[in-house]
Length: 342
Image (cartoon, rainbow, N blue to C red; front, top):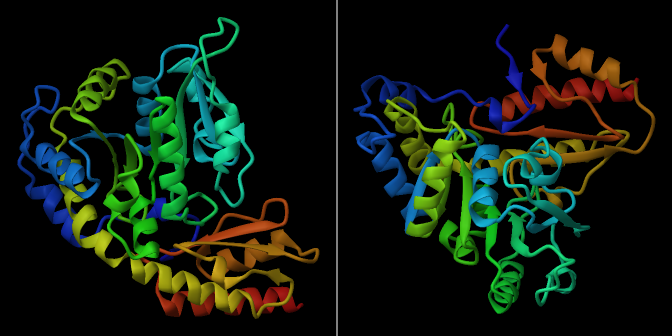
């Protein structure tokens, strides 16, 4: 069976053009710094993200944790939104790798209030207190919302005032830019470092980018090696990353339009609560306002050829990407209509 997969944009397969690029990629040894395809990818990524330099890393979690490891000293405190990916979905890695402590703030749809951040910045040199080593933002947030540029600017100004660097978990930063109708550099100009995933909606089969100043990336490259992330003939996986940053980043609006189309269809179903206006990118979150038979729903979807993650605590997420079209969405809505109307 040919599955239509709504579980995540991490499930995307490389495009035919990416497969050709992988087969034809010129390679070297990236640890020696002489893989020409990796070098092209890193140069392109640095330009796209508005930073001096960039580093190709195996995954988004690797990139975020490498940023924390590079920015922070052991024992430092990291200010981060409570529902962020770094807190919930990176296996507590900051405590193991960077030896850093997470100081979380409850956000409003992923947005931390600037005054709340300011109250948590450690001022002075009290030996009883950890040092504030880093502030982390996430844009787009995992809840599908995009942070406004004004909030990014306000956080950056506060951080500069206190001499604290800012890292952006920009796993879907190009989605955020597409929603805001701006260049990704307009987002990343407010942060010192950024991680961007190539392997989500951009469809590369593997890899992420960590970008920042040249000095920061030099330090991160050494720490990448320490963590076992040194890559050899990596051009074969860097080549699709180049297409991810060019061809695939340019078409993200299509995924967003499909997500809004899906949200509008879900809003018409019984038992579903969703505001399509709150769907900013390709992540469609909704809640059930009545008890449903989740097992029956998931079984019906699977029998119809759809893969989806089941509801959790009354909420469910469906994700659009380049391998999901309008006809697929219509069929999925038909299945959900039938099950939820029973």
